[in-house]
Image (cartoon, rainbow, N blue to C red; front, top):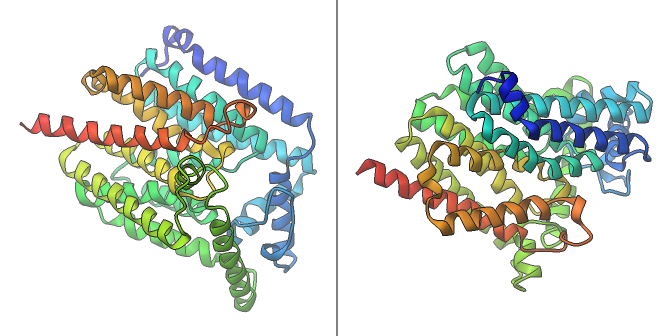
Length: 394
């Protein structure tokens, strides 16, 4: 899509999105310091001082669960600013990267008339992320940027190294993006017969995991990792029914309690199902961008559904799913031809957009059906895609 004067005027959704986030940033700037941002920078300070932030109650929003590398080589950089100024720099930089990446995604693939809808759908989730100063804004922006770069430069070795280096970095910060990267590697392996991505990604993960050894002893590094792993798994187990995952829906709506060890098997089963689905798509659909957006959307959906600590204010990571729905409608009207498909898709998008948002916590946030509607939407998209693929092959 070329953004001429005409298309720019038509893209009223983008201007509405910009106005919304400016208002959100203005509100944050005039409020007290975010506890999330304080947690990030205080953990970084403690880590550089040789202390163990993983066994401290640093902030009321929770304990520190991010990687050692993120504390040492990312969050610590914001300590050069006064706290409120640093928060503004962090949030503004995250939003710039996110907006630029989504704009690149839209510009390359969507017709002008469909772009506003994507931006409008993103407003509630982005504002929720702004109000909580969530790292997911930056992570989602970088994830989309790297996937778009790999799609546009499939044979450029230096760029591929850079993109996988960045993917390894954000995967090291927080494991939420790993499912999307795994599905991307599945596509490259089975459709493109490219095997370098696996080694580049694993190499990047190892680099970011062990780089703290350049500034600390192995004994202290091992202690931090041991404490972190114990804290993370303990928190995940305690949070299984508390936040906004599919397990929370099963417990709080259907009164079905799944033990922690069974939930791991349950998640693994659906992870394998998504992997097999991506492998099947990769063999049948040779259109490279379709594979990229499916990998992004399915991976993000898996993280939201099966991550025990899925939270309303971090659902900006569903950006690829919103885009996938609009893209499928643009590319193949037959996909949504049945009335029941259009109805369920529309209802699901409304519930997901409003339910997964702190903006509406007083009247819709308690609606525990939102993971159910996300689950239904994802599997309708998968089953419908498989049906159309079979029809095309005939």
